[in-house]
Length: 156
Image (cartoon, rainbow, N blue to C red; front, side, top):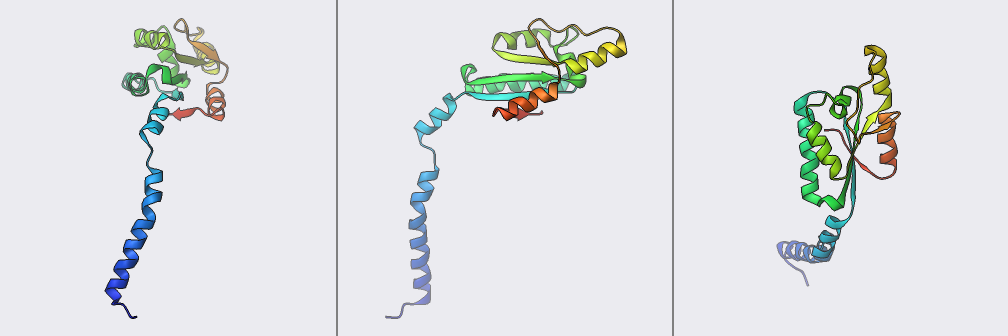
């Protein structure tokens, strides 16, 4: 039996379509899978290395938006400040109240000890950190360590 070439092409296309349906259905997450992903704990490390207030304001807004998106119990966030970004976590910060508020919502803020040492050496005074801000000797090394533990990384 000899089939029309157009009919053969159509039959081939239809069979390929039906063959791909189970695979496509398997790729789409179910409602239960989506709910589970939303409930899992996400871990995010955010670097702040710029002093500009618009940049820092945007960074703090990103944190609030992520907490709203995932739910505060489903995301852990650590902000590591180094270089010019160190001023976000000092008593000279324009955002002291927002930083303190986020710390009460389990956001960790960490200051780079190397940056604090450098500022101290050049100015003669070590910047005072906002109460509750943690300190690590090397900010970038802290970021690397958390990434190696599976944390996601954001450099806004």
